[in-house]
Structure formats: C-alpha cells, structure tokens
Image (cartoon, rainbow, N blue to C red):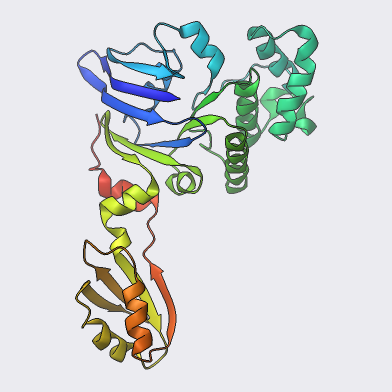
Length: 309
C-alpha cells in the first residue's frame, strides 16, 4: 500500500532523507522510529503530497505521489505532530467544515460526522468548543478529522505526543480498531514500547537513513535474542542443573543470575527443548523456562549510534 524507492530529500546541503526504501502492506500498522531530525516527518510529508522529494519515488496504492496528488489526497488521512485548532468553533462544526472541504455532500455530512465522533468516542464533546478540549481530546479530534473522508491510509505523526497514560492507552485501542477496519497505518512515535504492542513492522531511521526495517521477530533474530533463555529450578537444585547443562554441546554460555540460570544457545539453535529434556532426565524440578524478551527501547539503543543531522 505504501512504497518508497531511493527516496531522498535535501534542504540545501543538508540531507534530511537518503535513499529511503520502504514497503508497507495493506492493513498493516507500521511504526516509524527515530530521534528528532531523523527524517520521519519529512518522509510522511512527502507521502502526504505536502513536500516534494529531491530524488527517488514514492507510491501509495500503486500510484506515484508526484503524478497523482489529487487522487492520493483522497486515499490518505494525514495527522501532523501538532494539530492547530480553530477558535470559536464547536467540535461538530469543525468536523463539518472539513467534510465540506472534502466535497462531501451536505445531506451526508451529519451522519458521517456522527460516525467519526462515535468511532473516536467524542459524542459527548460534539457541542464543546474545540479550543476548550484537553490535549488528549484534541488528538482524538485530529483522528476524527483525518477519518472524515474514509481514507485507506493513515499517516500519523506522533499522535500520542504529550498525552497522559490513560489517553495513550485509549489512542492505542483506537488504532487497533482502525486496523481491524482494514486501514493501513504509518505511525511515528518516541514511545517505543507502545509501538511494540501494536505494530506489524517497524522501521528505525537515523540521520535520514533507514538502519532497520522488519518485524519484532526480525529484530530478535538480528540481535540474537532468540538464542537466550532464562531457567528457574527448585531451591537447592541450581548447582546440579548447571552441571547438567554444561554437558550440552548446543549451549554456548551459562551464567547464574540470582534465582535464575541465564543460557545462551549456539547460533544454529533457536529453541529451548533440549534444555527442558536434559533437566527432566536429571530429575530437576523446573519452575520456568523463558526466552529472553526484547523491547523496542533496547533495539533502538542497539541499532542506532545517537547521531544527529
């Protein structure tokens, strides 16, 4: 649904984006991660037809964004990182204004506005002044606005920025609901752990260059996390368990961590079945065997260098 090939953008001599290659499938949630100035917003503005690239190409639903701007804008709902609001407008008036801007017929506007208010849980605020809304409610209104014309693709730049924990959880639930409706969602955020929960794929960008693109499972493979296992056995059996495990050729390294045994399997091994079998055969009472977990914060620090443009 979204594809870029060698997408590059220069501001004078500054390379904001360098040879960006992305492929985002229909119905996916794609998390775009990177520090400030990495090129996330530049990429999104190009895809939303708000900015011309220096070179390379970008496509949405198979259409070149430079050659099909009017059609693309009907397919895309773009939400910037900060949504300005109009003073002296009520919520329903604000949405009806944008419905008119998208050439939705007057007789359909009321029902469409009501529909997006229900979807974003803003029915109770329909007659509230836009500038009186909390930050969280304004973000919901921003999502309601981009949904007015029922776009296939949502490009959301930091939609959870500045929100309290409850509002972030609510936005995350709304994004899942939009995915279930078949929307393709590209979302940037600095709240890395939240993207981990909702994204099918993630892209990590630094200094305008993509340093990683894939699933969380791909990140685990890249960092060798699937080879690491934590084992807990019954009290008094840890030393015996370590001796048994040391006899397994497929184990590369063993360390004891408080009540746990930390094990690293060799590169070619990806499961802990042999560990359980060895311990059971040695009459060891196993409390737990857990693969090491990885979150996006760890991955981000590992895959980037802390550089800025």
